[in-house]
Image 1 (cartoon, helix red, strand yellow):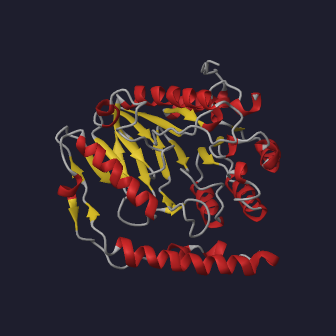
Image 2: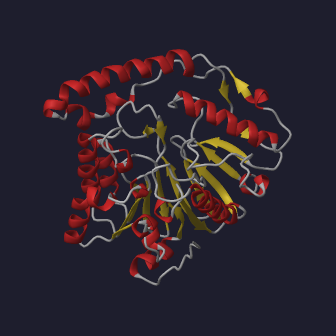
Length: 373
């Protein structure tokens, strides 16, 4: 099965072209990825150039899943070679790949052609798994230059960390009826988990310093950073939860891009979003284009319950109510056949509001692969 990308001349395709945005690969194309590029006068801004094969339940043979991942990486590599800035919003492998990855043909070209490598801060608002993955990635990146990570370590710079749930006024004041008691139990456990991260990891273990590499690339922490590249302004947000409040998968850094008079919001992994405050914030931004990751319906109902699925749909409706010119709804969602039925209310409302609501594949002139299996 050969995947052929045919970019159609359609109003939404023309909108992305005017905004300088290129859609590179999405879950709807058969490999886990949520990557875009933004063209600037100084080069390309490449966002989340990672790839992972689909989970075991995805209805393709493993060999085909791996082939699609390789094809995805080839697309990302072609853009990485001309990137001025690469941004990684968090350390999951569908958002970055390791330099040692056997499917990456030239790791130096993939990572070190860029002037800026802007990463999720590896030292705070990060869970245990991504703390380790960040250090593995940075170790391999430095090894490409013959350097060692231990030479870039320092004592923790902070000892006090705000609990981000305290800022979530809408979600924490919302009543969930019969589920409320269970929710409060989960929040209490989450506070203990957060406290443990602060006390045992962020305030105690060595931090990694920002880097200047011999190649000329700078490795910078993205959290809360504003960048301007060739007339394009990129605002990397401070960390948001990867899903629920105190989600054990950690934190991500969504992005707002101002390019050629357009405002483009890139969600990274918010799982819907599940948290009401995040949906309200996105809607207030009034983006022209929203790239929104959907809920992981392939985990329903065992690892993702109905309450949170309903939250994700309701919150996506809040985002839709801001009436973007285009909403791309992909990632997590496109991993099982019933995805469209699970979020059917969103498609109905998009039609009523006359807002184009499309997968990444559809924007590229393709049918979502899962819909063909």
